[in-house]
Length: 486
Ligand code: NAP
Image 1 (tube, rainbow, N blue to C red):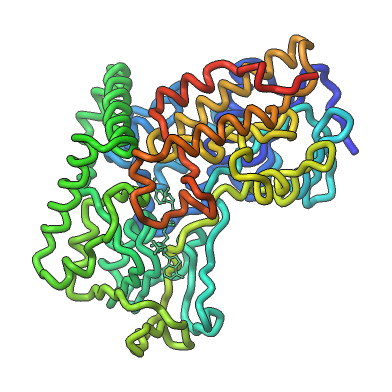
Image 2 (tube, rainbow, N blue to C red):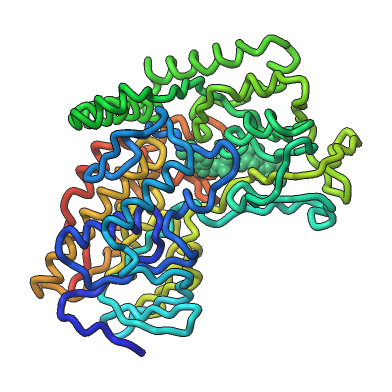
């Protein structure tokens, strides 16, 4: 067992994606380098390393989806593709020399709070002690492989969108996409351009917001390089737009009506009435995760694209069988079937007195499972970035992570000063938060009648039912009275 030697509190960060990197970099910028960044994969990047399917992009504008202290002036498009975002994070990781703190290809298998510290064990058999544990594994890292009869019998190529095989060339092949969430929709256009035939298996059609994604010209890039405040203004503008959409989800009003009309008129752009009706959602826009695309419906109207609404009854050697008895013969099946949310990345996290993440989060009472999205009652010195009930639907994830990181840094100051050695949210504080959640969703769009991963088995969505400003305010300063402190 190796023990941290420095007197300053040591920190284990699990996950070197956008939020874990941000935690690490803000620690470095604050002159606190007594931390280890654990990463199961070879490289940093998280979702942007894993999601390499054709068309993968971020639907938060490029100028907003980057660290505020590391702006980039030469984004190529309004909404960047995954590869460009991954290149940005790799550039930033290099600039801050994150390699020095990174334990790559190292899966944290257990974290147990013992004698006032977290004992972190990895799949390499190493054990290390830390004062604080920061879970930065992100809400969506656990891929869903659907339980479809005969799924293992398919003879062709099968990939999940988050596990793309760059070496497989689908040009000229018969491809099927199962799933029509953000990933399935993004993959549709590029695959439809190269595949000989594309079948999209759609269980629940979703509303699509038509959002053009123009390239920035060299002149625009030059201007932003010369005058960095233009990039800053652009970021503020897109942050404001994002906030307006966020508000549309919270209350019925002109914003929500506007989004609904916009999506409806996009749907009406489909010329063929039968196809239009096949793609008409039966829930309100934004009830499920809003999808933006500039070319999804164009792809759907191509001659080589077929929209299948019959249920899938099985997968066979040669393709997918649907409820009408038809076998859709395929060379490749793309599983755009999403993720089990909020699974925390670590199988086993144990606090003192028999409390574990599983006992509180999976098996505990729903109303007292988490504290302000950042903590879990009974687990001391444990913080989650972009945790359950954070405003994932109405604030950019980069902002949510930023607010969480600043919160951890504020707590860290107390450890640094020797004022405290442990802090855990009180069960009563988690319950108060849970109860206020349960009474605050009534006006929101997420409870208007649709199924989505926001629920994940809960009676209320695991989102933030208030405005982003309320989240900023809530996490602005730790509320020490809400914590058991030693
Ligand atoms: P998702 O939104 O959960 O969509 C999964 C899709 O698979 C749904 O259409 C679902 O149908 C379908 N499905 C699942 N199991 C099925 C089965 N057995 N048979 C038929 N269909 C099945 O997953 P996702 O598209 O990967 O997106 C997940 C989240 O990732 C998004 O909501 C978003 O937060 C994030 N994301 C963001 C971006 C971005 O641009 N920022 C891009 C991609 C993803 P039902 O709807 O009927 O369940």
